[in-house]
Image (cartoon, rainbow, N blue to C red; front, side, top):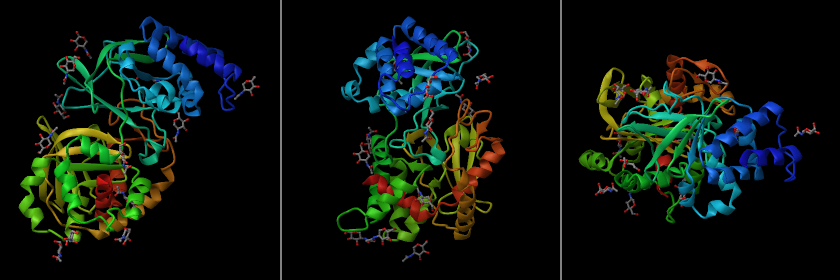
Amino acid sequence: MLFPAIILAIATSSLGCAQATNTTESENDYLNALAAAFADAGLTALRDAAARLSNTSYGRTIVSRLSQGGNYTIFAPTNEAFSGASDELASNDELLARLLSYHIVAGDFTNDNGTLASSLSPNNTVGRTLLNDTGVVQLEGNKSQVLVWSSLNDEIIIQNQALNITVLQSSVVPNTSVLLNSINGFLAYPTNTTSTLVAHNLTSLTGLLESTNFTASSTGLNRTLHTGFDEMAHGFTLFAPNNKAVVDAGDYLASYAGNMTAFAAIVGNHVINGTTLYSPELKHAGTLTSGSGEGLMFTSNSSGTFVTSTVGKSHVASARIIASDIPTMNGVIHIIDHVLLSVYTDKAAAKSAYESMTQSSGNQNATATETGAVGGQTMQSANGAVLSKAQLGNKASGLANMALGVLGLTTLRAAMI
Ligand SMILES: *[C@@H]1O[C@H](CO)[C@@H](O)[C@H](O)[C@H]1NC(C)=O
Ligand SMILES: *[C@@H]1O[C@H](CO)[C@@H](O)[C@H](O)[C@H]1NC(C)=O
Ligand SMILES: *[C@@H]1O[C@H](CO)[C@@H](O)[C@H](O)[C@H]1NC(C)=O
Ligand SMILES: *[C@@H]1O[C@H](CO)[C@@H](O)[C@H](O)[C@H]1NC(C)=O
Ligand SMILES: *[C@@H]1O[C@H](CO)[C@@H](O)[C@H](O)[C@H]1NC(C)=O
Ligand SMILES: *[C@@H]1O[C@H](CO)[C@@H](O)[C@H](O)[C@H]1NC(C)=O
Ligand SMILES: *[C@@H]1O[C@H](CO)[C@@H](O)[C@H](O)[C@H]1NC(C)=O
Ligand SMILES: *[C@@H]1O[C@H](CO)[C@@H](O)[C@H](O)[C@H]1NC(C)=O
Ligand SMILES: *[C@@H]1O[C@H](CO)[C@@H](O)[C@H](O)[C@H]1NC(C)=O
Ligand SMILES: *[C@@H]1O[C@H](CO)[C@@H](O)[C@H](O)[C@H]1NC(C)=O
Ligand SMILES: *[C@@H]1O[C@H](CO)[C@@H](O)[C@H](O)[C@H]1NC(C)=O
Ligand SMILES: *[C@@H]1O[C@H](CO)[C@@H](O)[C@H](O)[C@H]1NC(C)=O
């Protein structure tokens, strides 16, 4: 049995785990209820896999957190789904623990019918998973990685997976606040920005950036910039023009060929640096500040969400978001249908923003946890305060202000390496 095995390991420290957490009687009851539900649903491969959580300290934090109760939404691959998972999973406990933690979403997503709540496509529901291993997730404030889903034709489809993964059955586990959803595949967590851009065929964008010679050395890689991206880009929102958009903007872009200042401004205008905003949040974001200091105004109607570059009251360029919520290990990409053509920069805005970022950095180490959908009714800030939507917009704007065009470019440059 899955959870009893975990409990045994925990209670006796039989695996020699110094960090093993003792569970109380009620916590044991809770884990037993979950184990029974897994068994009832025939999820024996998941049961066996979950027993291995106690083999790693990361896995033990997951078990410990679950055992304390609370609202969780578990995505449970069927036995068949497990048989299609990579061979490495069978022997790599660290990988398994990370993957399983990506299958658990914090919060209550149960609809009135006792099944999984979901927005209708193209709108998405975004949930915060328990995956927070810093080796594979580097979002601002040590936030955990998100999972995105949406419903289409009465089916709930998990987004951003190579395979078409759908929810087969949902039910609330008796005596718990856990919604168990069986799925027909094993979920993969987001990877770095490079591989994510490539996977989404954003080749014109990456090609464009490559042609601007941000490669700092003849060997092709400026180590400083690369390191800067990996170590400092903890949280960003990138509006990535698709291939057609870049081709359509060809004449304009060609007119700035070789002008690094102009390219930095253009690309910086597509980035909100320091904060990762998903589509439900963008709908209420109002106007934020881009990496080059321009305004980025968000509007939403029945035909979608639009992003508009603004300078003062002027609307400089506009694009529609055609694919939302593509997470990477340290940010999120939204694909847009036009390049936001503007070489405007506002260094004063960048400077004041930098100062506001410095002030808020005290919150950066806290773990933020939403209690429901990301961008839903309320959100928890990094220090635990509940923010209103308006406050959220201001906070995002302040963090975003610190962005600098050139740094935005380095993100993308690094992403191509
Ligand atoms: C678990 O409980 C035992 C007995 O009460 C105690 O000796 C041990 O220190 C506890 N371990 C942890 C990690 O709390
Ligand atoms: C679980 O969700 C319900 C309904 O959304 C809420 O009332 C309750 O406070 C939540 N429990 C916890 C522990 O967050
Ligand atoms: C609940 O089920 C009914 C009947 O299938 C359906 O009409 C309704 O939309 C469902 N409600 C939710 C919140 O999914
Ligand atoms: C990750 O989440 C766990 C609880 O699930 C928590 O104990 C741990 O401190 C978090 N790690 C980081 C790096 O925030
Ligand atoms: C996903 O697969 C299901 C059946 O497994 C199918 O009904 C559905 O149409 C597929 N959806 C997409 C978007 O391919
Ligand atoms: C991104 O991930 C890919 C695939 O795992 C890997 O080959 C590549 O080295 C990574 N790039 C960076 C910059 O980490
Ligand atoms: C990628 O983009 C190219 C050029 O726009 C297009 O020809 C190709 O079909 C796209 N491939 C995929 C998988 O979308
Ligand atoms: C590499 O990047 C750093 C930091 O931006 C910069 O100072 C340096 O000049 C670059 N190196 C080259 C050879 O361009
Ligand atoms: C970019 O690199 C190419 C090939 O090395 C070179 O011909 C071109 O002059 C460079 N352009 C700029 C703006 O540095
Ligand atoms: C580069 O573009 C900027 C912004 O439009 C412009 O001010 C500057 O004069 C250009 N530099 C060159 C060398 O063309
Ligand atoms: C998606 O959200 C927008 C804005 O909230 C709304 O106008 C639209 O009706 C929604 N679309 C669907 C299919 O629910
Ligand atoms: C965001 O700004 C910070 C501070 O200026 C910088 O260190 C970081 O590299 C930037 N990140 C991106 C993705 O541009």
